[in-house]
Length: 454
Image 1 (cartoon, rainbow, N blue to C red):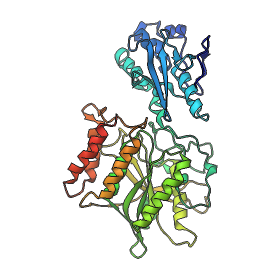
Image 2 (cartoon, rainbow, N blue to C red):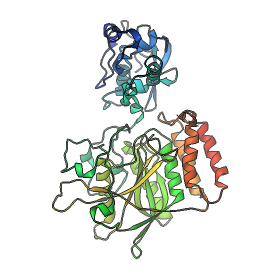
Image 3 (cartoon, helix red, strand yellow):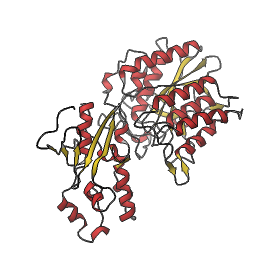
């Protein structure tokens, strides 16, 4: 990366497996020739040349940047819409070609760069300029013309592919089993369980599945669940901080006499989902925290940042693995609760996150190759009297961990026209507020830290 600029700039056209290849000037003209600017442009037709021609961006030195896995790349925007990488002088035909090239230097397994979401022009993502163009020149256009794949795909840094067969089925439940590759939560239509049929390797593992009720499968919920409001508050806070998926563990107690599972503590994992090197250390720290507090591992949570809080096929398999492993070899029953938190899904009611507790019923014995059946778990939420120092400490540790993250939520931006991201997280957390109203003064300190994380 420190090589001298070549005397004759190399033009790089490869954009990986990305559907963001720039159109030629002739193709652009053809797309709009019938009725001028008013004719419909496909998303591939909105190129840097279009943005330059219509004055939304201007050519300049060092106006483009990529931040990926702690590495920074700077580029010049040329008058013809091409990009010159400052460090080497190489010329790239499109944002995706440049993004893919830079990311492969850091992560050779990266297949594509999703340039419109990962390249920033003067600090703002190029995809936002594409959206602005559509609003300005084609206000009646279907906004799906802006690819949903542009939406923060690259900022799941560290989510390198992890093959499912890498899992060690003989180990205890751990972070390695949860930390698997996941795509961004884009709009996906959940399917009913009855439509799945036999397990199919060709089926998308990210397919969302609607939850069934225990009564719908002629079962009774085999355990009762009580969850502390402080657990919800810390979990909800964690899931709000980043546009990438997060994961954490749940600590509590299982009473075999009353068949009551009590969830008392959330333990956020301060690590990237695919960072297997640090996963074991994080897991060990959480195990020690559980032991010190006399708690057992009773479940796990994860986020679907911008999608419905429903389990995917992958989540169903992970949940089933956890249930079997927590049960152990003595065949004694101990439930393992899964929770999905959806903070930024626009289908939610108001500013509150959707929080979905679920469990998986094994498929019928005569159909062993079917998927497990995801079922909704009825939960009693127990209101805490005050915000504990443990929870406050975890919140501040999370703030410090994500402070410099490229996928940090920009809390000064707007969630909806009259609500900032900071207002949104405040509103959602107020749903789990302790009885002691003094908590609000304590949380204001945390919120002030969020406001300065830019």
